[in-house]
Every structure is written in C-alpha cells, then in structure tokens.
View 1 (cartoon, rainbow, N blue to C red):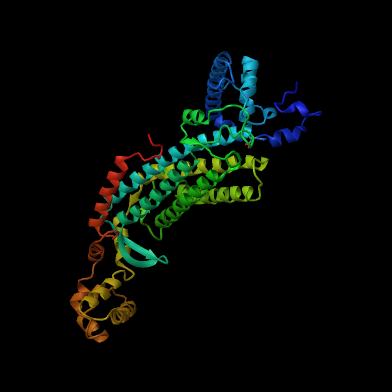
View 2: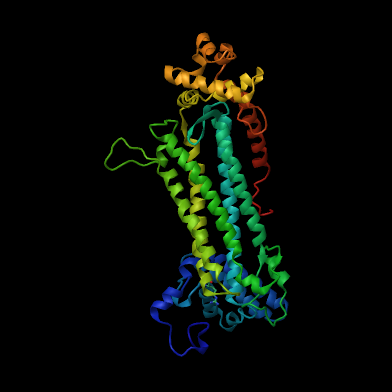
Length: 467
Ligand code: ARG
C-alpha cells in the first residue's frame, strides 16, 4: 500500500518539490492539540453510535494520548510527505495501534477536520487576545487615574486646538480597545459551531450524533449546512478584520508616542527596555517598539486583504486555495498579541513630562474657544464673538503675547465688548474643568470614567469564553 493515505488511485509518486510545496505541516502543526481533541470526540461518538467497537475506541484514545505525549516532548517528527497535521497524526496513530487507527477516519474528511481544528484553535487564541486587551485597558485606566489632572494640548489637524487632560487621552484608547475586544468576542460567538460530521462536503452515510461531538468540543452546537461548514472561512475574515482594526488603533497610538518622544515635543520618555540606540549616533534613543507596532499594522491589514482575495472567487465547497487561510490569520494573531503585550508592558514605565505638557497646552491660543464662549455668555452672538477673538489672536501674534496677558486698552481697541476681566480669567485649568459633562475632558469626568472602567474591568475577565 502507498504511504499516502489517499494513494490508492495513483500510479506514480508525487513530484518531490510539489510534495514540499503542497504541504501545510509547517503552518498547521500548531493545531495538534485541537486535532487530537477533535479525533477523540469523533471516535467516542462513533463508538456510542455502534460504528466503532469499544476495543477500537480504547486503542484509539490511548494511542492519541501517546501521540500527544510524543509531540509535547518534542519526539514527534512531522513530515511533509504526510502533508498536514491531520495525516501526520493519523498515520502515527496507525503505526502505533494498527487497524483501529485506520478506522478513525470513518465518517470524516480532512475538510470537516480542518474546519473544526481551525475553529477550536482560533477560539483559544481569541480568548487569549481578549485577555491581552483587557490587560492593556487596565494599564491605560491606571495611567488615566494618575493623569486625570495632567493638562496637555489637544490637537486637531495636529495644530493646538484646546487643552485636554492626558487621562482623557488615555481613556480614548480604552474605548477603542473595548470595541476591539467586542469584535473578537462577537466573532468567537459566530465561529463556535462544530463542522464535524459535514465530512467532505455532503455529510455521511453513517448514523452520527453531531450534537455529541459538538458538545464534547465545547461548541454551542453543530453547523447546519455541510457545504457551508467545510467551505466557510468568514470566521477567519472576521478575526483578521478585528485584528486589522485593533492594529490600526495601536498604530495611531504608536504614532503619538513617537511624536511625543521626539525632542520637538518632549512630552514623554519611554523606558530604556523598550527603546534602542544607534550604531553611529551616540545620542540616539529610538522608540523602536511603537515604530514596530505601527509597522505591524501593515502586515496585519495585508492578512485581511489576503484572505478576502483568496476566498472571493472560490466555488463551494472546499478548495485547496483555502489552505492559505491559516498563514494569514496565524501571522496576524501572533503579531497582534505581541503588539498588545509590548504596549501593556511598556506603558507603565512611560515618563510624563508634565511641565512640558502644561506649557505646550498654554501656548498656541488653546483658550481661544473659551474666550468666545465667555463673550457668548455676556450676550454676544457666537459669530461676533468668534470674530472678536480672532482679531485678539491676530493682535497677540503681532505683539508676541498670550491672550490672557492683553491689557485693557488692547481689549478696548479690538472691540468695546471685549472685557479685560474675561481675558485675564483665561487659564488651561479653567478650560479643562469647564468641560464637565459625560464624555468631557474635565478631571472630574475623567475620574468618574476611571471608576467606571475599574468596575467593568474587575467585574468580568470578559473573555467571551462564557466561563
Ligand atoms: N491541509 C489542508 C488545509 O489546510 C487540509 C484539508 C485538506 N483537504 C483536502 N481535500 N485536500 O486546507
């Protein structure tokens, strides 16, 4: 008999290069635990249904445990001749236990097998990803609490806009990672259906119990259309989309940290352990980690484009093209998890130059909107107020002074309605404190939000795993 489990109808061997090119073992070997768990559930079900004898089942379960042991101790030799994780494991099982091993593939195909293994594996990775996100959120909430009163410039168009607090800025990312975690949890829920029993594409002639295998593997239930179950890869698309979005959030955050650490901003310093130097310029300390995280978003987005493009022209049901699905999603998850880990470890060590932030917040006429608001409160229409403050800013630029240092005669010269007391009352502290409503940047509000987040993050580990 041929060495290949499918070799019966072949007359000549696989081309040597094709054998290696066709193999996916380098990529899918990491799903070995899920493959073995799936096989055990399948075998137990076959035995319960009278398709497999108790004796064969015992041999299979023992044999699979032995194979698992071999893999985990590093003894197991995966080979490209056996193409993928499924055939490597099955073939080793058969070498150990003989005919019982050959009976395991009854009522099963690699098509439902790979769909099952991949869902199981990605479910585990999804849970781990959500835990990483929760950790990063916790780190950010702590920073927000420490910096609820730290005033910094808020930007639009990267031009000074209005003062905000650093705590508020940190909480903006907590919101983003909350939605990111939600996307992973959503995707997990949709993917948690068991394809086992769909076999190659149409189901099987054996009297299988699909509820039993689904329950044994912790799925919510069996998939309900065999053609869809073996050819659907939208759970991978969803995870890649969620990963791409999260990586874009991390990339924006990275960009800010990189800017903030530059000599020109001087807002922060990142810990040495997360930076590197230059081999030629002795003075350099480069923010490599945020730069790399910003860069990783490119390949993660690439993974999303890859899976969408791979699947878009495929007829039902399984096609070999689909073997390319795992490379993209594994790479994306590995890298995203790394990014989240680096940020969670790096940010607690971030040094914040509060005096520099305060000075930056106080320049660039960041209080101009508040002066206009004060004029409106004195009964002046907003458009007039806007014009008056605009003229004041132009005056200050010419005189190289700040709004709050304008004197009485300057105010009167600009507009009779411009009251010098209003101008003198301007301060970044007042600006920030005045935005005291849900979603506003006032230290009060930041502290309220911090408390809310601390409760949410403590209450549930919210992995979506439903444990
Ligand atoms: N290694 C394959 C994959 O990842 C497993 C499924 C193979 N099925 C098949 N009919 N050739 O997609």
